[in-house]
Image 1 (cartoon, chains in turn red, cyan):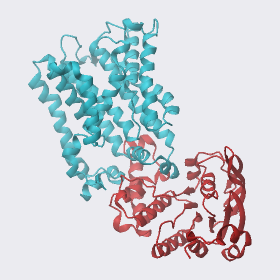
Image 2: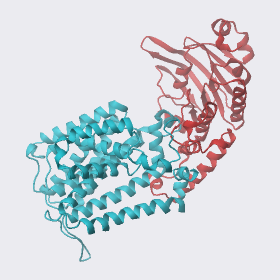
Image 3: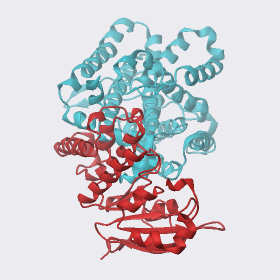
Image 4: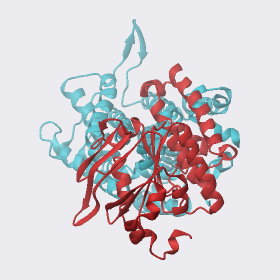
Length: 258
Length: 344
C-alpha cells in the first residue's frame, strides 16, 4: 500500500485552475520530487497535500485513510509534516528552543499537568531536550544550538526548518524547496541530509527548482505544468520525456543552472 | 549569558532547579515584603494613597491578562468589556441574590472566561489591526448592552449600593475581617493578594510549555500548525485566561467602589490596559505592573495635568512605540537578556 495517494486533486481560485486533476502515489521509503516551471502549481499542490488549503475536488489518502478536510495540525499528528519555502522558524527562540517546542506532539502530560509541572511533564521536557539536541547534532546544528534563530546564517536556517519538522516525528516529510538559494557545496550537503532523513525511515516528497539536485536524489519525479501533471517517472525517463523537454528542460533558461 | 538563555527553556523550567528559583524567588519575596509589610507600615495612615495603590494593583492585574494575549500575538482591546461583564455579574448576584462577594469574585472571572472563549473562538482568527478593531468594537458593544440591559443592568443609573465583601469565618475564627468603605486597608490587602497570586500564576504559565506554545503562535502560526499544535485551541485558552483576569478585576472594583455603571469601563480603559503593557514592556512579566503603577500613581500625584490625561496617554503611546518598543524595563533588563538583539 502506498503511504500517500493523491487522487484527482483540483484547486480553483476563481477562474484560475492552480492544480488540475492531479493524481500520483508515493511508496514508503521513496524520495519523490515535484518539479515544474514557475506558476506550475507546485506550491498549491504542496498545501493541498498537507491540508493547509482545502481542495476544490479530489482527495488525499495517507496510510490508507482520507485526510482531506482534516485540519493541518491533525494531519501533522498522523505523521505527515511539511516544511516551508522561506526561512520559516520561531525567530525569537534559540535553535534548541525551536526544536524543543516542536516536540509538542510527543507531550504525554495534559495542559494542567504541564502548568503544574507534573512528574510526567518534567520527564517529557527532559526527553525533548535530549532528542532536540540529538536532532540538531545530526543535522549539523549542534554548534549553533544556543544562538538566537534569527541570527543563524541562511543555510543553517533551512536545516533548522527541517529539524523542527523532524521533531514532530514525521513518517512522510514534505520539503518545500529545500535547496533554493544554496551554492553547490551547500546543495551537496543538503542532498546528503535528505538522504540521511530517508535512512531514518522517513518518506520524503520535495518540491524543487534545482534540477541537478532533483535528478541526483529522487526515485521518482512528477512534472507539473499549468496545474496539470505532464509526466511521471524515474529521473532518466523524465530527462528523455518530450513533453517535459518542451515545457521545461527544452527552454534555454538560466534557471536550470547548467 | 548561556545561563540566562537556558532559564527560558521549557526543559530547565520543568526541572525547576536551583538556578531558576534563586534570584527570581528572591525578587518575588522582596516584592511581597514591600507590598504586604513595607507599604502598610509606610502609608498606612494615608488612606488616599492606599486607595491609589489599590487601584494601581488591580489595574495591573487586569493588564496582566492583556499581556497574555500579547504573548500569542494579539492586541486585545476588549479587556474593558470583560471587566464590565465581571463587574455586572458580581453586582447583580450580590444585590439581587445576596450572594457573598467571595463567591462572586471567582464566578465573575469564570463567566468572563466562558464568554471570552465563545466570542474569542471566531474572533481570534483575525490578526493584527483587524483583531484590535474587532475587540475595540466589542468594548463598545458590551457597554451599550449594559446601557440597554433594562432591569437586569438598570441601564444608565447603574447598580449602586453593592454590599462590601463580608467576613470569612473558618472554624469559628475570623479569617477575613469585614470590609468597610471607611477603611481602604482591607481592600488594599485583597488587591495586593490578587496581584501577587496573578503574578505567580502568569509567571508559571509563561515558563511552562504552555507559555512556549503561546509564544510560538506569536512568532509563526503556520509553523506552529505544521508541528501539530492546535492553534485555535491555544489561542482560545490564552484569550479566556485573559478574560478571567478581567472578570475578577472587574468584580473587585465593584466591591471597592460599591457601584457599577455602563461607563465604568469604556474604550479608553481598554486602551489604557494596553498602554500599561506597552509602557512597561511586552517581553517582561513585570511590564504591565510597572506601566500601571507608574501611570496611575503619577497621574494621582499630578492633579494639575489630569485634564490632559487622554492627550498625555496618547503621546506616551506614540513615544513608546517609536522610541521604546520593548518598554521601560528593556532599558534596565537588556544586559540580562541573552536572547534580545534588536538590530539583528
